Length: 100
Image (cartoon, rainbow, N blue to C red; front, top):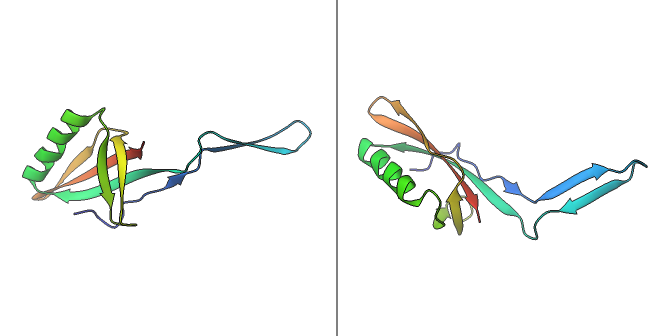
């Protein structure tokens, strides 16, 4: 289950800087906006183990991810190792993904 505090900020790849005369100069580093995902789950022990197995097998591999916030499937990679904390009989996992 994906929890409500999960988020999907969009990155436009825009770099703005002022020139010595005060004019604003803007560079676009890539042509299309990209999304970074911070996905928070509550997992059972078996689901936690599945997550870590999937991470270890795909740490540098592209895979598809469905984001329920907009109903779109994205091609992503892990951008950090999953962070997992025990909460009673469950585990809270935060997974960071980056759109490729």
